[in-house]
Each structure stands twice: as structure tokens, then as C-alpha cells.
Amino acid sequence: MPNSDLLMRFMFDQHPVRGELVRLDRSVKELLRGHDYSPSVKSLMLDLSCAAALCATSFKDGSETMLQLKGESGAPLRYALVNIRADLSFYGSAALEQGAQPAPGGAPLLSLCGAQGILALTVFPAEGERWQGLVQTDPDSVQNTLEHYFMRSAQLPTSFVLLHDPQCECAAGLLLQVLPDEQNAALSLEHLTVLARSLTGQEALKLPFEEILQRLYAHESVRVFAPLPLTFRCNCSAERCLTAMSKLTPGELGELINDGGTSMTCQHCGRSYQIRAAQLQALLKESS
Image (cartoon, rainbow, N blue to C red; front, side):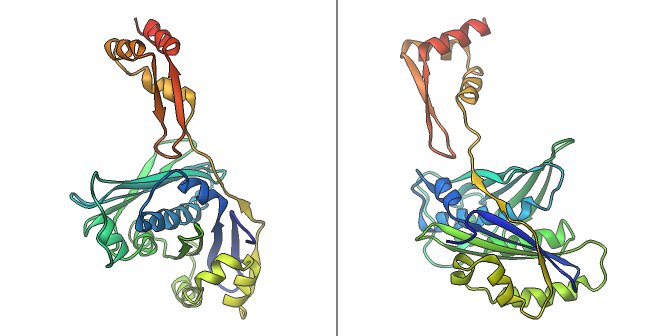
């Protein structure tokens, strides 16, 4: 698959609009590995991963970006999130409420999140306070939800095209975004978005990026930039597990020591960490 796990930015010479193309293959396979997601949750994670990659490059200050979906009270989806760093490495996971299953058929996000689901876009700048924007989920798709967010909260009209194949566990996406403070940007975005909506899943997942742009924008002058690699990289570690264990009370640590140790499993990548009794003894000594 050409241009796998890459993001390429591009600009139009005659329009005040910037664009991005992304394709995820091995990286999302690693994200999905070890999770027994239902088809609807797997599709959601594929779209959310592409969307997070497309959003991340909007912030140039070393920010870390998280996209998180949460269902309304009583909805099947407990959460779905993808966290992406400035170097475009990412991790994430999703979970349903215990015993819950999304209703078959119907609008995809409605069946998972209900009518009052929330999408949160949280930015963790390299310097300064984190900030967060919230928007109610659109019943149909992540891409519609994000377009609502950028129009209403960011006031920066943006179009998304998110496509995926749950069978091969791969995904692709396209972003178009007006440049700030430019005249006639809305008309340009509308024109370019109509053409972008003609992109098929087969094209998005199989063709080289340059050929995609040539097919979509044959009559436009487009400048492309060097592609950027994306990777799956979880944030778990043995040190983080020990830090979490250090929050336990002496009594709780003592019980685990008597059991001969314990283990912790990362909710995102499924990796297990064995914590020996001697390590717990050291934590207990530090706390006393």
C-alpha cells in the first residue's frame, strides 16, 4: 500500500485553503491489536485515528492533542479516545459500558453515543495551560461532528473526508481548511469540498497521494510538502505502573506483597507488566 502511515500537507495556489492527506495501515493495526472490538467500535477507532492525525498538525507549538468521544448516560459507549503527540506518534482505546452493545443499523454515532454524546478536543501545549473544546456528536459520523466543532468553536471552516476498511484494518482521510483572515475563503472551501467528496474508499486507501490530488484537483495548481511519518506508540511503561502502585495505602500494598506481587495491563495496548513483591516492598518502605 503506497504512502502508508504517512501524512502529506498541501496548498492551493489559487485558493486560501490548506489541505492534508493521511493514510494509516500498520499503525492502526497495532492500535487495534489485542482488542476484541465490535465492528462499529473498530470503525469508530479507525475514523478517530485519522481525524486525530489531521487535527494534530494544526498546532505548531509542540502540542499533544487528544480526541475523545463519550456517550450520553445509558448509551453503549463509555469512551473512545486517540492521543497524538507532536511527532505524530499516537495511542488510544475504546470501551463499552459493561454488558452494552450498540443497536444494529441506524446512524453509527447515534447507536454508540446516543443523541447527546460529546466529542472533546483537548490540546496539551508544550508550554502553558491545556485547553479543551466540546461539541455534541452528530448522529452520523465523526467527520460531521468535527466540521461542526471547527465551524462553531474554532470558527475556522474545515471539511473532513474519513474513509476506512474494517476488514483490512486501514484508514485514510482528507482535510481542507480555510486560511485565517482570507477573503472569499468560504467559496473556495465549498468548491474544493465538493470535489473532495468524490473520493472513494478504494482511491483513498490504494492510490499514491499525488495521484489522488491529480484526480480530485486536475484543474487546480497544488503544491505538496514532504510526507510525515505516523507511528503507534503507547504511553505505558513499568515506571508508570510503579507510580500508580505508589498511590496505594500501606495496607493495600501489604496485601499485594502477601500475594507474591501483582500485574497491571495497559488499557490502550494490552501489554501486561509484572510487579514483583520486592518492588512493592520498596514502595512500602518509601511510604513509611
